[in-house]
Each structure stands twice: as structure tokens, then as C-alpha cells.
Image (cartoon, rainbow, N blue to C red; front, side, top):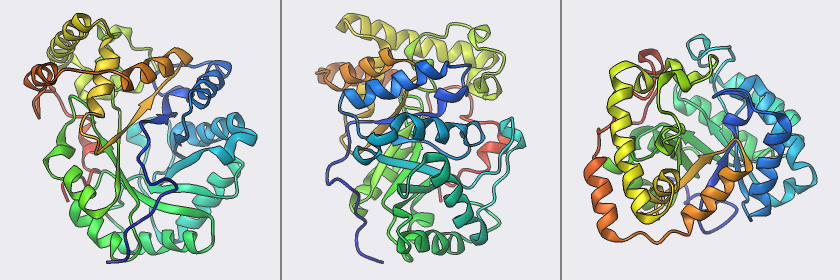
Length: 328
């Protein structure tokens, strides 16, 4: 295996700003509000921003690039490729053929208005293309100076090792939250041993763990969560019971459920949460969460309510679940 990967900083960031929701994934967001949210994150000292070419078919990268402007030099910017575009999740396919890698990167560079990407992720492993073929093409982007480091999403140790034998894997992203604890089974310890970073996206359960959503009708018509099993029917009701238990514990501490859920994601210090936000006050929430001092007995109570597998329903639709390589 090649030498251990390096990232721009030796220390993992407290949290990463995830920008997916700023371009309508969970409902409409005013562009001025989106810009104010990114500005609040930067003003608070945040330096890590995560986007993808898939988000709003490239419009998210355009927004991020426009909002950063001259501040780009102060930010560790990550984006992803691998999906083909489509209005709904079930219309999107994967295409990670080697010949698609550099054109996809060049398109992201143009949209972001930058000459390099700090961490370039393969959004999902394409089961029709050997990871070695895709990874070799991605490694050439590093050689050309277009990308500084490479990452993978939703993979397990086997895929990681195959890629790392060709070029260092700097970071891995997978869903990680109170109701998506699968990375704890193996991947967190594995990545720590490799010297790679782990970033957990959907750290607030796509907003559900905040307790703000009380019934399925609270989702706007275009909200992508309507297609996810955890937010449907009996699953919704059972998961709301988990959230209500979290809200009760948070209330005892005088904090919000969102703050407590985000603080939980950082308690092991082996993972950095990717926290989405759609308003400046969400940044304030995240900053408060990272400053929380939580007694061990509260963590124990939370773990009892949210053991591995506690959530009702799969994370994604059946077709989207087939694209996950987290156990491999």
C-alpha cells in the first residue's frame, strides 16, 4: 500500500458544512438565505465545505463557488462525482468509467470557479466498473494538480484496500448519526488504523432528529425525504418515538435535540459530522453543539434508546440501497 494519505490539516475539523439542502433537496431555499448560511459558517471559523455535482444538477456547486468568491483560499473544498443527473433519485444512474472522470472534474472546477478541488470523492462505486479503473483515472487528477486528495463514499474495508493499493484514500464518507450507526461496526476503527478521515453525512438524520418534523405532511411536495422508507407510514411513527425520547433528554439539559444529536456524532473523536444547514441559525446550533459537555450517563441513556439498528426502515429506496458498498 502507498504511504498514508495527507489532508490539508493534521487535525480533523469539528464539523463540515454540507450544502446539499441549500439548493432545494428538502424544499425551496432562498439564494440570499443560502449565501447568508455559508457566510455564517465562515464567520464562525468553519473551513470545510462539502458539495457534489449531483446536487441540483450542478447548481449547488455554482452557488458554493459564488458564495466563496475570494474566500475560496481559506476553505477546504470537497465535491463528488459518479452519478448521472436526473430530477428524482430513481432517475439517476452511476457512471464512473475512467473516460468520464476528468471531464466531470473539469465541469466541477468551472462551476466552483476554482483551479483545484481539495478532496474529490467518488460519490458511489459503479458496480459495472472496477474500482481500480476509476481510481487510476482519479489519481491522474492529483498528478495534474486539479485535485489535492481523493475520497470514497459508502464503502467498506475491501473496496478501500483495492483503491488504496493504487493511490492513498484520504477520507471516506458514509451516513452516520444516532439512527445510522453502522460505521461503528468496523469502519471507524479501520480508518483510524489507516490514517484516513471519516466524515459522517446526514448527522441529524436528514433533519428528523431535530424534532422539527412531526408528521409526513410537514415535508414539502418536492422534498426528497418523501421517497425514503424511514419517513413513511408506520416507520415514521416508530422513529418519531425515538426522536421524542431524544427531545426529552435534551430538554433536561436545556439544549435542543439537534444540538445533542450533533454532539453525539463527535463524542468518539474518530469522525467529523457533515452538518447540513439551510439558515444561519443552524450554524449557531452546530457551534453550540460542539461546545456541549455531556455527562457519561446521558450518553449511556441515549445509546440505550438508539442502539445499532434502532431506526425503522431502510435509509434509501431498495434501488438506492443496492448502490451502497459500505459492507464491502
